[in-house]
Length: 342
Image 1 (tube, rainbow, N blue to C red):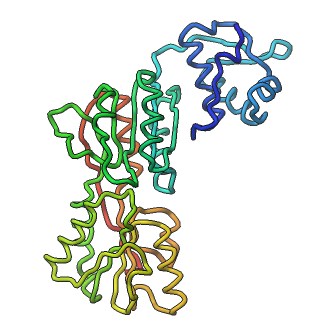
Image 2: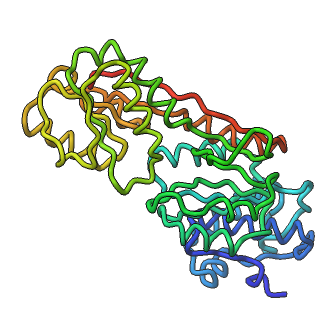
Image 3: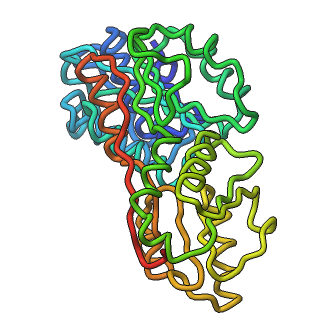
């Protein structure tokens, strides 16, 4: 048997290569392709044959040593020490992009799982055709499929595709599809986009009363659900706020007394540039609210007010569904972090 026929390194996967290396060896041990006392290639052989760095090879072997599957002896090299004691979770994790807050979800998800779990991580860049290709090529290969379904082209026929995955293997993250009812057996750990923005603005109502107009910057081609627009409009109409919904910052005249809500990071950066160029004071002349809490927003402009779901909880709860073998439709708490920009 050629050991390099067992080890798979996918250059298109977002999973770190050292993790792919370790997972391939664990799978081979689990299936019986590798047995106790079998000798593995040296670090140099791995590096040369797989076209990976020595650091990557060493890191993969260190991970296997930590799990008690691999050991090394001078003169003998690296060898298998034991079998995998229990069936591991093999998970396909498919995200639309890897932004700062998506990384928070990923890190929390991985940290909450059994360290022996195999996670194959792919990014489809909001492209439905790429999402479909990745999924179709990997049906029936995993114990669980954890998916974020955000696409730039609107609402493609996702249900026919994801219904090819057994419901006990499927978990949707961030967004619950409209057809998912509590008694249908689907699992999702999600934001309630319309209710969330409405509730967050209600919580900020006292501060918003110091301004004349609320402006939501919502790009025409955005992967964010349009339910956000519905929740924003509902709040403004009920609270009698003058308001506007624009596709980008260039589409609106910025005047003192405006509050801007951005869903995309690029629009937030451009808005900050305009505020600074015009020497406006945030929290006094202009209000700024940004979607998705990240550490840097606690610092910029002496603190940017954010409206955000609890991304750590989202990752942890998805991992808990897998670990416990449960199914649930689980909304994640959403809150506003009030800071000096409002």
